[in-house]
Image 1 (cartoon, helix red, strand yellow):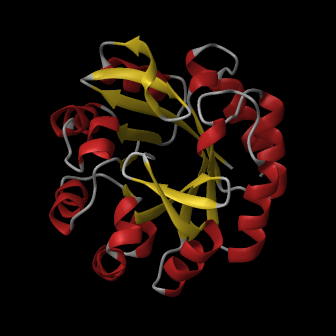
Image 2 (tube, rainbow, N blue to C red):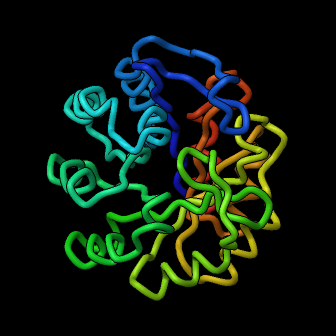
Length: 241
């Protein structure tokens, strides 16, 4: 299982939100590039970056910072937030971002997702399943839909998506443990590669996610608050392979 540290960028700062609430943020650094270098030095083999401003506005507000991170580190980046049209996705992919994470557009413009899979290869496309309960939320998790997690996952798989990022929004940033049941069900139902996010608080959580078959886990608050040591999490994940 791959351990993927997260860098969430808002107004140029590295922050964490509580349950995706933009009014409940904690700033951990004023230099996201320095944070990326720190995670790379600690052994990260991939870094997950979210443009939080982009997720709310639909525009890649922090693109220059993302480009700078990409040019300074030697591990692949997985980028989401505000990628709602082909042009934005293609800009990111063309300058070397390894994977783009599509959330809102997967609901509103599935043809775009299919085009990206066909053009760039499915391994470079991740679809975000951002769940409030069983339902998908979009536009920075602000707008709830009537679409279920399983319905969106099934449709995306049918058009060529191989990898999903599942986030339980109500657990995100809370460090109350992941939604193991939801993650395990998604792994079983889709037979696709599942990255787990939301609520990871301990090395025991990491080990359990590995045991149930998650391809990777996104670590955020638990890393920044010191509850999990990145090097130790990587060691545990490697032992589970």
